[in-house]
Image 1 (cartoon, rainbow, N blue to C red):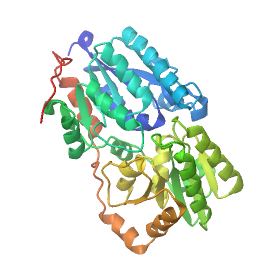
Image 2: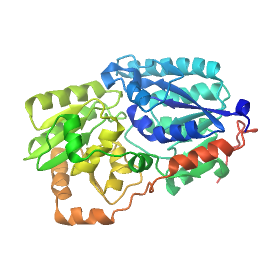
Image 3: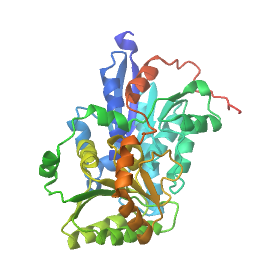
Image 4: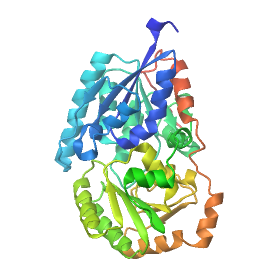
Length: 388
């Protein structure tokens, strides 16, 4: 392709979570001689409250073409709605100025929904990654499927998710099963050893170690707070255990959960919290702890590749494909305690060696970029509803 005719691919990232999955797609785009990478950074990346994680993007060698400040520092429903409006307006202006040929978004968060809306109105083809998934406990569910309907190109992680996107009326010829993008970080990054990780985090591991990530349950009224209290109560009963918390996303109710974690840390010397570990340290933590606990998608998508157990609490991830390494439990102390006891049993630990990750073994990023560089964009904006 002539240099002047390079296809411009604009990637939008709004959080540490989606960047961890997008990083290798971005690198593949950057390295492809037929493509030009454009980057819009928004959401939590630009907030001091969430660790200014745009610095991690820059440290990886990427340059933002436009920073779109969206968050209002108000995690009430009104505050989140205003953040959506900020992201929508900012992305609209960025797309106007950058003139991308394709916009790439991942997942289901509200700022990504806003970016998708802006691209849709601007008549820019939209490529959606990790569509077709289901998380019944979060309002992200509706946003994810809405993004699917605004998108022309779909990259999904499993056969089940491909079928769901087609069920939503999308053309089978535009729905590509590529596997889970998170696996590429596991295969591409050189992870830290236990000693290196301890030095980096400035903590000391104990006989037992757990990684905890718990997000608000956004479709339930304040239940995330009560559920977090139940989790903390269960963790308080543990002996000889170091607990590493990562802070929740910028969702409705997130600030209250952060306060609960901070209070717990102040009273328990074996507990430590981090606003953002970064992808390398986060994956290194999974590799070095006994299990992952909470309601984050990483417990379902990445943790199985490490042959580590996951305790998945409540309904936030209800509907996602799961490995046999995942233990589902109710969001109450007794159920969480029972799950903690099970994860350490000999039978369960031995079963992890045979557990298969339904999200694949890596290589998704290469597949995505190969398709982005070759797929015809002629007439792609006008979709017809695919009836089953």
